Image (cartoon, rainbow, N blue to C red; front, top):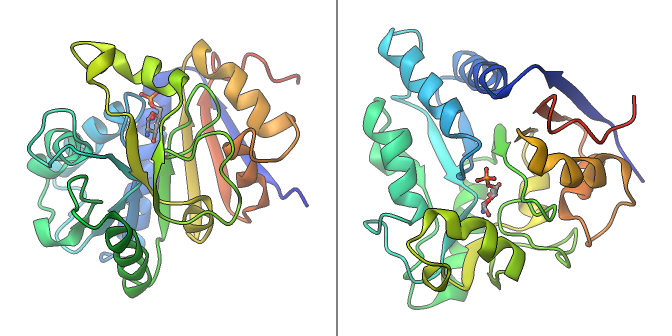
Length: 247
Ligand code: GLP
């Protein structure tokens, strides 16, 4: 059964960032100890920059906010410049009044990976679930690191990355061979339990994935298509990312 996704098409990436930040701030103002789901990648960087700006103007405080991240590369510790923990520190946590103990991220260096994944699900549950989860989308339709083939009932686990994702993400590494081949990711079922979802996509290179997610057949071949089954999901995208959607 397909649900209904709110589709918000704006002019450019700057608008996406501004509106995404407004949504996150509204959530924090509604509940100062909100549980925010956070994403990494190039797309949300501008959103975090906007949140930092709003925080510096003293219009929002993160002092009681809790956060949960989507994924982490296997084998990278939090001090590694390509780890997602490092990314979060650099783009958000180091610049706002968030308490370090309130930020939950998967540990890419966990000795017992299965225990790490189980504990992560339990910790999210103990937080009372996620109020608003920010998402990106991979050019192959992945969400977090739920690659094509991931099922609707998938949970936090360690997965191999596809060649397409390794190639896409290699732009951030010195060489494609340095991109970890595996990553920890929350599952699709984990994401679907959040009360609200906000997926951001900008640029023409995301148009095919956005069209498949919104208009293609729903199923594991395009993990983002499962979001249609969520009651409160918004795709906030720019014109370029919307370019393959028929009006
Ligand atoms: C990575 C992340 C995803 C992210 C995707 C898109 O693979 N695991 O969570 O949504 O890339 O990233 P970008 O915004 O850089 O295109």
